[in-house]
Image 1 (tube, one colour):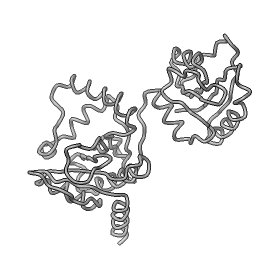
Image 2 (image 1 turned 90 degrees about the horizontal axis):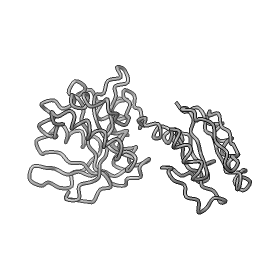
Image 3 (image 1 turned 180 degrees about the horizontal axis):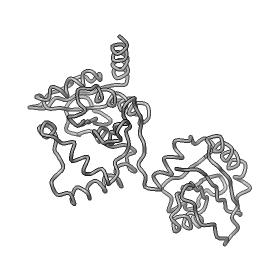
Image 4 (image 1 turned 135 degrees about the horizontal axis):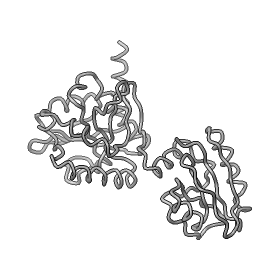
Length: 297
């Protein structure tokens, strides 16, 4: 896990950003990280990086050194280095003293090719998929699930490449996707849930994202789908900034329709064998409060 956050600042302009960087160091220390800053002279080499450290550097030269040595790093943009090409960094921080702890952890995890933990509920943890999840993903698609969802093919090598591409491209590009649902008691992958781009051809009001879910049959009927789906919808509205979330299900999929109704979705259209639904934050919150009251009773 990330333990330290270190600034590398070019000597030629460090005096103009020193106060801001020093304030960020103090903030990161309050988060529980060992934090420091180093002024690097022109032509000076930096030490070998540590795998548990996130490095912030403010020049192309320093960033390239970090990249070449396999460090977890991001760029630091400040008033003095405006116009500096900050490649090859994927992340650029401005005013780092205002960056929260979770963002630092997630940058470090992305740089270390580790999955993000999205959220936790009473019984489950939701995280990004990793390549080793493939067999468990295939296991989710029992006969009932295959009636309504397209299952992975039997060509595991092909599916392995598809999963790797999804992990490498969709998560970093979108900041969301479909995620693994893990049973906290056993550590077992028991479902997949999350968001995808909305279908442009879907009838009814336009949605910012399309919601989908699948839970293995051994965990159905326990309220887990409702528990995790409600948490993810709240995440979509509050963290991802969605205003309208869509979903769809086959007309014959009564179980799915029941869950969507409990979650607060409203049916907005039907075409042939498919029903389409949308939900707004207010509806999701009202449904969550209703379910909470029912549990207390």
